[in-house]
Length: 603
Image (cartoon, rainbow, N blue to C red):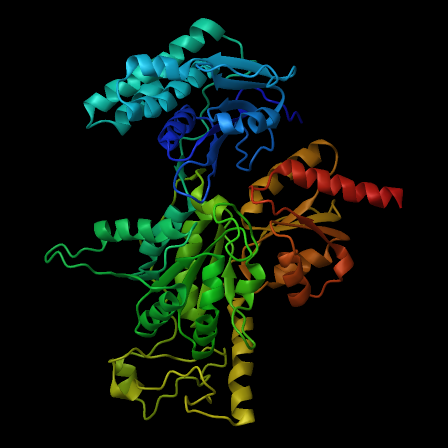
């Protein structure tokens, strides 16, 4: 299987300066290729400051529909002089570098195996536009025109995209046309068919959309019936709540009165946000908070409270690089262990691991149902790659007959018939007690306790009474396995080597398996979707002699969790770890597996 560029199979990276308005131009290029029916994915590598530092945007064009980072750059648009040397070094042999030739380029900044394309973008825009800001913005559109010319992007698609963006702004539409044509005409006239690969129309995107995971998560919360959100802004999770607010302003307003049917609170910190969510859940609302690793650290005490007091809550953890502040705008999967056992004492939390924005939507809905069914906090673990990047996913589907699973609760009629109600009593032998809502009926009143309590809800320091409660919580953990999503498994008894992975590693693993199979090596694959692990995970482990555990952290956290929670010998699980902050790619997985197999042969 070829790994070099070809028609509808290449990667473009755009190097620019944060704050120059390049995002909309980059999106124009990516979405125009998407609207030609060609699968694409966009990856944004941006600094954590507001303006002035280097930023890169990567567009992978993949006719085969691969969504992971390619691991090679075929076209580099070097629009930032500060990073020119690095950008040139990152181009794959045989690739192309496009730069702004308005200014001279040092002769040493050349490579014999890279074709250099100079286009005087700034000069053309300076001559055409009068203000400094318009010159900067229109230069971005001009480089889109140049790339469109070199790749033969459909001009009708570009025109339709621009008209959609600037439908109500005729003057801006005209200016963008002018800027686009500056770059397009220059590239066509001076370089023509220089590139060895192009884009060719396909029909692989008609039933798909482009969306980021944070938007999909927020949309899922709306469809799940969430009405309360509390949060402290924290990159890369902030846009989950920003988008949820925009949806609520549109869909959570009572038609007749104009009254808002939702409550959004920006808290003073993450600990407060978690307390607000637990309070809303205790009152019967569906409530959530989005955060990232530092927020999980602060929320840990109240996550333990929610676990012990058995209060529904949903936490969305869009993971980033740690520890401490770390690299806020880079991706990782390093919060797995922190979330699984968050808080002091014996706690175990239900975790969901979406692998794409599509699963962010469906897992978001499932999280609210699970939280109420199990009466416990549920944590959705995405990451910056899923949450803030542009993914192509199938059109989302919805069952209009969906009814929220409110779990086991007693209404006023049921309480009226009861002589007494005990909040933590296991009536049905499934380890899940019944709950009541405040104000429902006097018979349903109880103390919500984070301190020691017995099955009747009374305070206790009696050892046996305490054990009855915490042992029931352990049994509820087993009950949870009936309701959580099963892992995704691709298995054939022909293969004895397996791969286990999680979350956003999925796209890279899928591509790596295809390339390994093309070279003669077949593998099986299990992607963990949830914690606790179900029997399917143990069965998969038992069916293989060697298992590669692919994850994006330094300390092999998924592997550690498997060792703690399943019956597996450590030697069977080989960690493949990627934690540099960039999204994982298939090349790294293939190289790591081949290196490990070579060790075995040598031995």
